[in-house]
Image 1 (cartoon, rainbow, N blue to C red):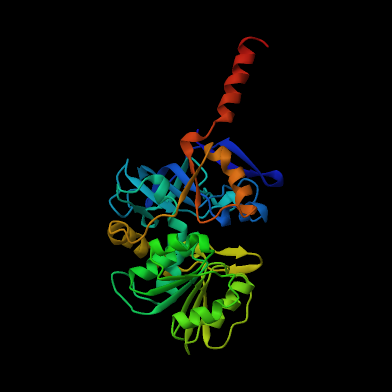
Image 2: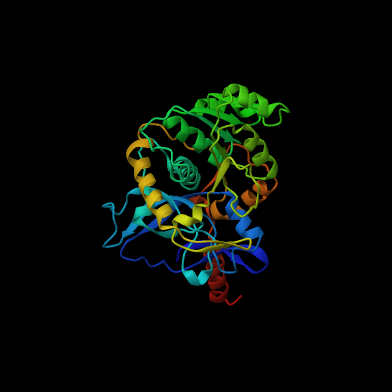
Length: 366
């Protein structure tokens, strides 16, 4: 039976065997080959959002193993695909997180990718690229590529995974992209499309950004979305009707009256209601429809034309066995401008090994 990383009592992560999941008429059954780690994964475990028996993990790359009779996209068994799922849901909802040998996802929320990308690379993109796209195109209303729009666009914390995607997507529509990051990341972010980079610890950061934009800045994307980052970013937005995207929607904040805030939460695309830190988030059909459109744009235009590059990959050892160490790294802030990626082929099936060992002991009457 396939393996999965299960949340058990006292927030322990345990590898167990589970039956092959069933899939519906519009779904794909996907054999997972690689998974990537996101902050939401460890937070679901650490803060008790994932109940006992849940499987966390969002980003996956894999091979189509089964196709529902009404699945869109003309998928065939054996095709390489990627996507993300709603990890950490209660077990009774029968939704497996990505940290499993098999996942089920509706075909409309899965995308193909060119052979120029490896699965280790492509698995870094689904969650963060969709989050960035929701903010830029769906919430702020900027035009999708290949349309162009000559405006100034600020990405605060551009070296984050979402920030790297936001930079590239803003550049794809012709924006003049300003970003903040530690100086060690500036050259890398310019390679992704940033026109100018500033050190977010510079005490003159607000005046420097205002000077770079000639006091004309209406769009900002806060990839940290904590009190200090949002306050500084808001101070740079000078237009009468400014727009701000934030990615921690459960944090309450007061903004200047000339700024409209758009709070992005990836889970709204999956069709499930979400209660997060005491705040209710409804499922949004329009968010799902946008995600479906964006995945098609990735397959047909962004990826083939090199307009969306993956995050830097740090390959972690031991497959699912290594995820707990990855969580520890991320919680200790030791993950910088990179994505932790795991190959399912590196997972040691201790469950089966123990079973075979127990059988040997019984056979020899030990």
